[in-house]
Length: 417
Image (tube, rainbow, N blue to C red; front, side, top):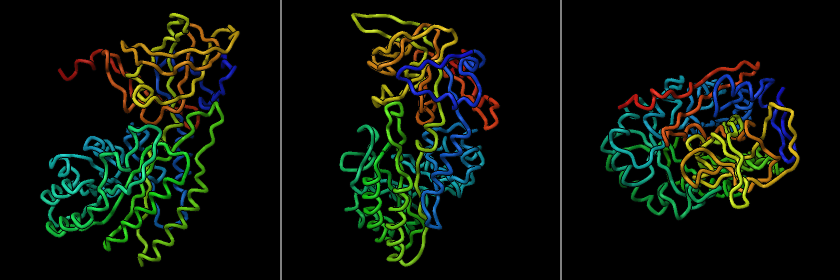
């Protein structure tokens, strides 16, 4: 019988659909990525109903999670998909997406990468005059999309703000005439424009401001077939502190008003897209890991686990917060709530999951759950320190458990040598 340790921890025990996190660790190894199919499908449906505008599409940003099985579920739910590399295109097509379902949003890529997409009939977005010139040489007379930087950025960390005046992404609107010169030079047709302001906004206003700015740019191109408003839809990573969800309903109402007014002025309906990644998958994933060490160093208490930053890079990359749950096989009781620093097993001082976090007393052999790891989790994992990347498993709607990516073996470490 597993005890879900309480105290200051808000438990997500329903996530496991009747399965037991300790049994999962014993069967599939530690650490372990666990996904919930029901939550994933629910988030897909929430986003599909964001707008009442009839020609609306949701493009899943697969850089957030490119697991083949999860991509197949996303496709079944009617979402299209964005790609950032030929590798993502390859995986997406393996998952059943057609070329028409894929939007290649590239950044500083080679002619060969552009050709890879063009030869498969996939629409390519470029984000500089230079890259548009290269595309014109690769595919003269072709169709193209252009990513603009509307000057509005948002995000939970400066490293994930992808618009505004201090980022590498997108075309400055002041260069529209240069864009048009290159289009004419290579007889290219702009069929779409797109943007992405950043990752993890929890208030709708910055997004609405960026959409209005993008629509002003869109009005300067008469041949558009679609506008991709981008993404960055946030999820509440501080659930245990009562953080509110992004109000999708209110955001959708405002977006519908803005889009309806713009379409009337443009004179015809075109496809409107959003490209969320995190919102679709973040809450559908939890990392389970094992506590191997409890120690005190100079008055600070450390909880040593097997969840290093090779397993979850977000905290060390972005100083990101993830809520933590504790599961215990024994009947031992946590006597206190105490500030602890939860760390991994990588030989780096920055290998910290949570710093000075108030948690119930934790013992060796406890299992901890790192919540909301479905986005930018396993997809960013590595073999640093020659550690093995964990397995990924999926809890199906009926409670059945399926391995959707096997755990690395030692042989995998030398497979390509």
